[in-house]
Length: 175
Image 1 (tube, rainbow, N blue to C red):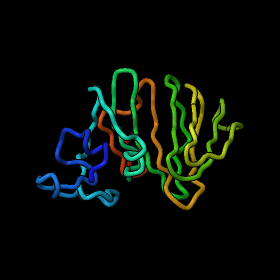
Image 2 (cartoon, helix red, strand yellow):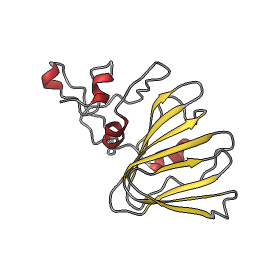
Image 3 (cartoon, rainbow, N blue to C red):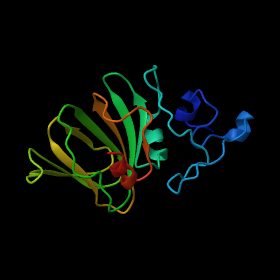
Image 4 (cartoon, rainbow, N blue to C red):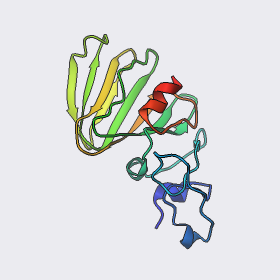
């Protein structure tokens, strides 16, 4: 049975969609080594329209390093998948606040006022929420043996609507 995410999608091409029961043809697979789904609408962003989703299921199904799922004027929802040993990378957002919610995995959050003094360090795991105030240097490192699956809320938006980065290298190249 399709997930709530798939039922809310107005397009026949969605992640892990049960095409046979819906009598539609599946889309061709994405030609990308990072895509683990058999069908995906690359660049799909559901903002700024009203949107309801099973966020836990969508987060756990995501295999992209970063995927902008909903982008509005003042807020953005992204999904992330950080492989074991991987990290978001040390960064700062001078003019936006960020919220992270881990649905799977274990890691370490590092934050501080300067990039050389990340004096706020905490272990995080399933169900952890992380608040990153504007102007705070931060990083999240995956210290576990499975991918970290999380969703992130930026206010205001940080990435262009429809952003998809298959890997951290793709993300770094885009900046």
